[in-house]
Each structure stands twice: as structure tokens, then as C-alpha cells.
Image (cartoon, rainbow, N blue to C red; front, side, top):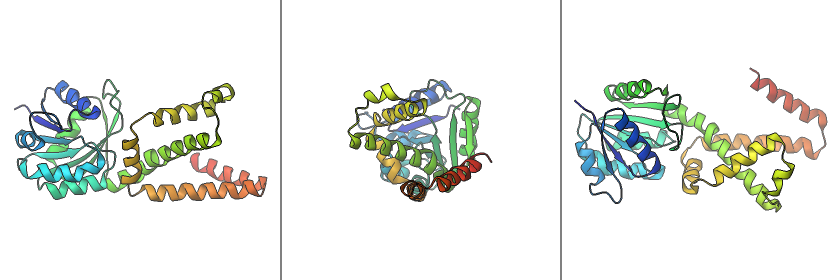
Length: 257
């Protein structure tokens, strides 16, 4: 029997990517989006696996809308970058099997081989194991973890790193420095940061705002950043070389563990 997958939001960038991926694995794929002939509820009723490829804030509403139409033996999963709240919403909306999924890559990758996908168990084992096997056989690295642990790490990997790049770009803007002219003075470190900031700021602002707002663990990570900035400023304002060196050495020791 060929597994039938329905992708809700299948005309978005990641939705199209996963449509191609699933089809490449020999699966039948149905797609529903705002302008498709079939609705999300219609394709969900026909599918073995329903994938929510929608913005983070929309997961709760979309899951509640399609959950009642799904087959009891089907599975519901998402591909959002935050896991606690989406997973809770899916578990409430559908009594069957649920898997939280986060592909740690964007829609421009040609293959899943060598890339990481995080799976957070929600309810049930049959479809969880099916998905894990499917991904691994395609060459993906699968990381299995709980939703809370996922969000704690993503608060650093995404929340903290994105925040710093956004703030870096804002500071350059507020200083009135021409971004193009900075290239004439760039060190390798600055060039890397500048390139990353420009790349991020060209992306979908709505998505990056959602990543900052939707992960409850971000607040803890950003408070840690706030405290770190205050500690560094404390020594700079007092021209305290010994204190700043000690701070750098302590941090160096942590990363050398």
C-alpha cells in the first residue's frame, strides 16, 4: 500500500520542498492551500499522514480545523521551528498519532542527505517510526528529543543568534554607517557577521518575528544575553582590563570543555 501524504500549506516554500521529497520517496502527495481546488479538511480526510506546513501562529487554528476530518488511524505532524506549543495544539486537535517535526534547513537545499531533522514524539509509535525510517533511508540525520528540550536548544540556535544579527544590523543603521563602505574596512570576522546579518535581513520578516515571539525559551536566552552585555559594559566603562580578561578567559574555558 502506498502511503498518502497531505500537505496543508503545500504551496509555500517548505511545503513545495516536502512535496517533492515525499514524491521522490514514492509516496502519493495531496496539497491544500488558499487557492487549491481541495480544502485542507478534504485532503486531510484522504491521507495517512497530514503535514502542517503553515506559519507558527496558524498551527493551532489549522490543526483544530482539520483534526475532526482525519482518519483515526492517520498521523498529524508539523514542520515548524518551535515545538512545545504546536505539539500541544496538535495533541488537542487530533486524538490519533502526532509527531512534532523540525527540519533544520531551508527550502533551497537540493537533497535531505546529510541534513538534520528533529523529531519530537507526541502520541503513538507506528507513524513516528515510519517517518524516522523514511528520513534516515533518504540520508537525513534524525535527532529525537522532547519538545521542551528542542525549544531550549533552539532558543540559542535560532532565537539568540537571530536576535544578535538583527541587533547588529540595527546598530549599524543607527550609527549611520554606509553598509557598502564597511566592506572596505572589513576584517574576516566582521565580514562573516556582516554577510550573515544582510542574509537574515533579506528573509521573510514575518517568519523571523514569529521565531522570536513563539518560543517561550527565547526569553531565558535573551535575559542571559542581556546579563552578558551588562557584564562586558561594566568592565569597559571602568576601563578594567583585568576584569575583562578574566571574563574572556572564563568564557574561553567553557567553550574548551
